[in-house]
Image (tube, rainbow, N blue to C red; front, side, top):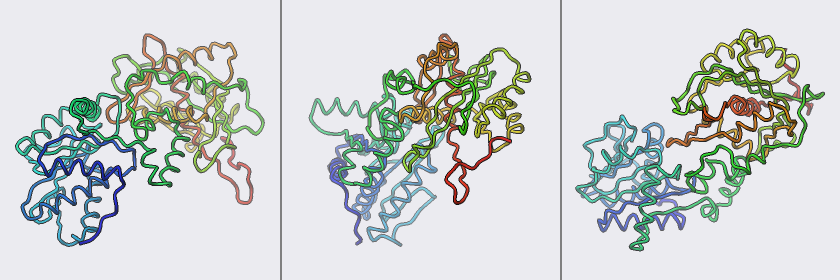
Length: 466
């Protein structure tokens, strides 16, 4: 018999509670929230290895489901294979049908919890686990998975991290806390990153670097490392974040000698991307907005690789046909600001504009972003990270209509957190537009530009747009 790697104290506490429920057929439902990369998958694999060993002769099923089979469930498959080999079962276990691991008469069944997945008919005898439970639809769980353990009073474990306070995991955690208040039995376990870090100095260094990069108030850091839900956070920016975004530098009408510039361009006439009932992020806009930022590479480090961005100029055109705007946009981007990178909203009518600009400025200088739920979410997360880290600053108040409109949109901006860890940001139709806000997010994307450095020289060596 081989040997498994030792578990940390918090893993042992959770594992013992789960095994006690399994062995004594208590049928408890546990919620386990461990900070990202804190050992949740290792704990699950070792529990499965132990239960398969205990049931090798008498048999029985363990069931583990994930929001998707590929790649999420397959990650658990690979982990269990490795642990069975570590335990000395190499050559004894086998795979059946691509999703069932068999050891003697015991079986570990891996399933997808996608809404369309056909999982009815399986029975959980020993244990049922739901991985990343915050991304599994409650209806799917209660209708198709929960009944799998009804006849066996199976112990169930929901793994994951908090989200918006209304997911399957969030609701189960809250129910467990209420039960614990009544009977004193601990069924909900939460291990934030600082507890994990007590047992791993490299982990502490990694998470502290993530905190510096994202900011402690970033949705992903808040949920995946602090294990705090996002409920009640309706605005995209807090008052503190708006203060961080406000810079002291002056607005510029022309570039500074030697300055390196990038731009974000939101094209008027984009089509809705997600059917937001409020007509939010993808609603038709009647303005084209251009945001210019100067890039500062002096603070770049292995932790913070992206440059600081100082917003130095805003342009906005309302009701101007695209064909009339193109010559001016090209002149501003190519001849005036000599932007090294331009990120363009290529949604709907913006697709043609992005294509035209790419040909005029050079394909390597233009990044076309088609707004989808996923791409808009990534832009939003990157925008928040840039604000939280202090990398993004907007010019000081100058009394201009552009300054007032920009800050009006920033103040009115809303955020919607989805169950699949994507987020949506927008301004409600009744409160105005979000073109400056979108162009700011696009500027952050353009600001990921990395200059090429000539050999033997320390200065930036990329020519401006030709």
